[in-house]
Amino acid sequence: MEPFIWIAVGIFLLSLVTSTLKVFNNWERAVILRLGKFSRMGGPGLTFLIPYLEKAYRVDTRILTMDIARQEMMTRDNVPVTVDAIVLFRVVDPNAAILNIRDYYQTTSLIAQTALRSTVGQAELDELLSNRDHVNQSLQRVIDGQTEPFGVKVGTVEIRDVFLPETMKRAMAAQAEAEREKRAKVINAEGEFQAAERLTQAAAVMSREPAALQLRYLQAMRDIASEKSTITILPVPIDLISPFVEMAKRFNASTTPTETATPAPETPSLATRPETFAPFITPQVAETAMKGTDNA
Image (tube, rainbow, N blue to C red; front, side, top):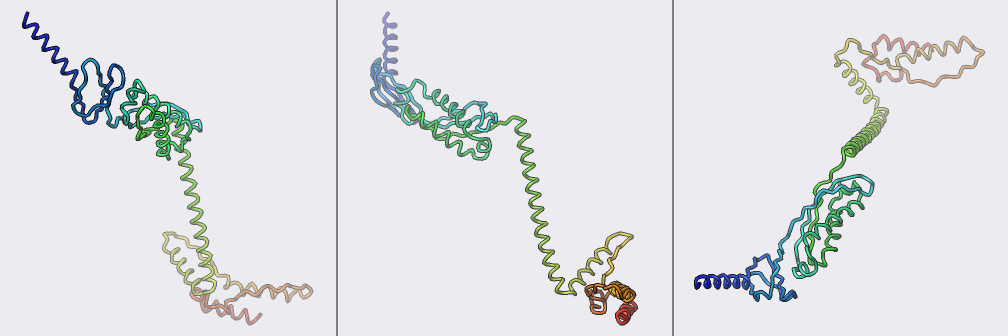
C-alpha cells in the first residue's frame, strides 16, 4: 500500500503547487478573489495564491479586434444599405471588466452593432459614402461612452464596406453621367463665349487697319484653295458693284423729277478705297469704275 500512498501524496503536492503558483504573461493581468471577494490585482510574472481560498481571473489587456457582421439598415434619406465594420478596443481596467460585467467582449459586440445601426440611420447616403471619417468618429464616441463603465476603451471604429442595391447603383450612375454632361456643356458654352470675345476684339482691330482685313481675306482664300474640292465660291467685294448701283439710283432720280428721291448714304467706292481689294481688281475694272463716277 505504501507505493500508492506516496503516489497520492505526490499528486496532492503537485496540485497544491499548481494552484499556488500562477504565471501570467506580460499582456495579462489577474483579478484575484479571496473567498469570492476582490482581494488584489496580480501579474505579470509569477503570482502566489492561497490554495483553495483564492482564485485568479485572467484578463488580456492587448488591443482586440472585433468584426461586426453585415447589417441591412436604412439611411436618413430612406436608402437601404448593407454595412459591416470593425472595432478595435482594449481593456484598460481589468477589475471593472471582471467585477462589473459578466462578458465584456460579447457586450461590446452587441453595443457596437446597435450603435452602427443607429448612427447609419441618422446619416444620409452621400455622407456615408463621401464623409465616412465623420461617421466613424461618431460611432467611436457612442460605443466608447457605453463601454467605459466596465473598463473597455474603444480606440477605432471603421466602416469597411457599404453595399447598395442594384437599382440605386444604376440611379447613381445615371446621376453621375448627367453631372458630367452638364459640366461638358458649361465648359463648351464658356469656350464659345471666350471665342466670341476674341472674335469681337479681332474685328475691332481689323476695322481700324484695312491691311489686316486684306491679309485675313487672303489667308481665307488660301485655306479654301488648299481643300480638295472641284468648286470654290469666292465672295464678290461690295466695292466693285457699289459705283454701278449709285449710277442706277441717280439715273432714276433724273428721269423722275416730280418725285423727291431720298439720297442714299454714301458708300465708299472703289475710287476712294482702291487699296482694299487691289489684288483682285484689274486695270479695266478700275477704269470703268472711275468713268462711272465722273459721269455721275
